[in-house]
Length: 206
Image 1 (cartoon, rainbow, N blue to C red):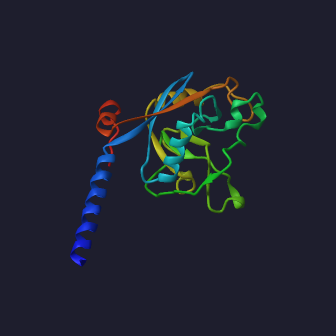
Image 2: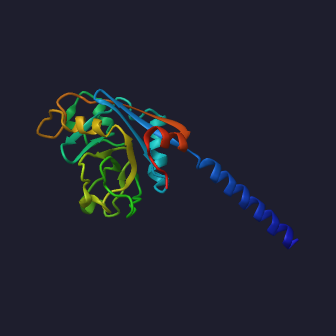
Image 3: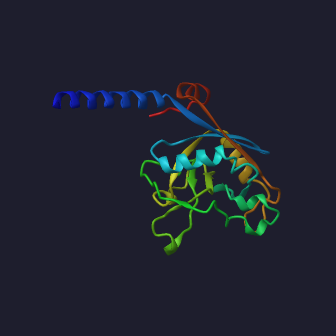
């Protein structure tokens, strides 16, 4: 009886391993289309809460019609606020989907050029460094912004369209760093083989 149970457990384990290996052969290619061009990125698998949340929002078309509401040259461009869909620019930056995400800050994910990271509330009001449920930023500084490392969750990387980030960061803006002309986005996720993503965009999976 004991041997049977062990054999059954081993079989289940092998099936789970095989399934995981099969799943890992594909990934989601995220596409952010804007008036300034198209940005493509991948989401990291070792930040699963942020990855799953982002994919859910994309599936729900949550980001479509939102803008990059805060852009700072040589630093980053920020978007994903549902408030940026309305006609009142003064509330941009304060919106969210009604929840936060537990931090998934990993030391090997750095704020390099093109890194995707979650915006969050700072200071003593957020000691756990929980992320905004929807707002994100893309690092525009070509040298990266290492002073943000280990402070915010980095959960993806731009693999195509880095020059588009530069173009957006260079747009005319007001005193709040909000572009004077709305830069709206449409975000989609397409599942494809990792091998194809590597062939098309040169991104190497570890």
